[in-house]
Length: 279
Image (cartoon, rainbow, N blue to C red; front, side):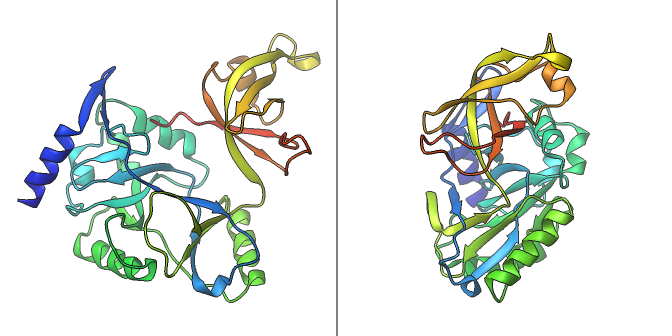
């Protein structure tokens, strides 16, 4: 009965837009930036995976913006009939490949390389430590080659945390996530879910271009962007030669890294990272 009810709810809340099934965007918990005024011994720590955020609603996989992924039936066949929060992930430094595979409108065998990395239970009413215990039980009760729990560990100090961060960076990762042991799952940004990275990153919308000079003559020099705070600036570094020949499209969303802000709230030393082409 629970499965039938979930299927009915998914059907009633979804529609097709340009050949893509669209559902209501799921309520997701989002992180704030790490600060040193916390007691790190009260947090569970995990690697920040650079994958594609997804929600398993008990029936289908849905993106953060409400699009239904065309995952093959065998990918989710052994998933439980309850809501799971996680990341579709292949490996470190494979974001573009993961995004490309999951954006395709028909199921395909490329999904055999992807795993759903579980890191939270949106509908569980308990604290995170209790949710973690429940997640450990789920992956044992519902064994699947495509469902894996993100490793959660403890640290003893800020120095220990920074050492673990450096270890992850040295191994090709991008940062850490900190989940307060007593936090409840909420919709939106929480000061009890934190992210720690060597550099800050953010997203912006491409609104124009500036032509390249010298060895980049006839190609992209920099992109003109507007970030979510309304600041307009140029990003001219971080692009491959192929990206300079075929720059991100106008109105596309990109991710960039930066080192703090100027007095006018313009990101310092912005560097292009990738096009955020998630559904």
